[in-house]
Length: 178
Image (cartoon, rainbow, N blue to C red; front, side):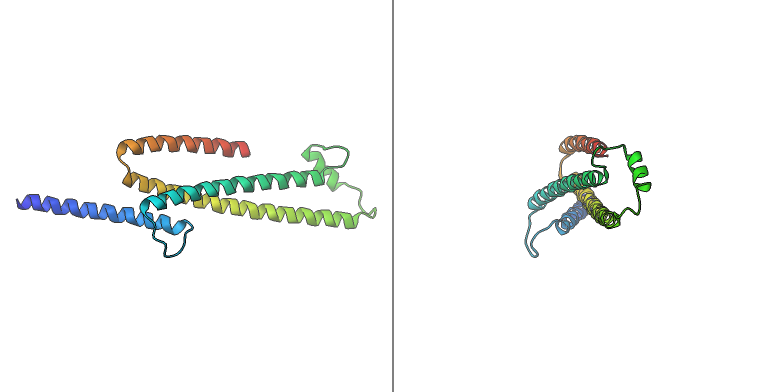
């Protein structure tokens, strides 16, 4: 009888620790997602908002990549001669050996300043993209940890397979973007 009671206490203690771990994970997620301070959120609401936040981050990432690509195209068009578009290596040689001192210095200075501005913006966008990517990865990791604790093994297996497919799709998309 005492052995039974001891087993029950150990099981209760283990369950208490497990629930504390789950609750701590949900609290971490809650702190990462944008929400009103003091707003009470259920665990389901936290998971739903996390999924929404991840989707928003992915959408913003796509938007930033598009803007980055457009800026890159604008930069290439700005550097290209009016009559034709030579290959990139040729462009570099053309700009290096261009006619200097023919009264175009003010135009060149403006073009160079525009290029510097576009490059700064590209760097800024890249940093924002990297920040959002790392936030998304952290949120996905926490979400996975919580799902492992909450969902039964069969559901976890199915979710794992879906997640692997998404990861492969994402890697393929990233590879295509490069």
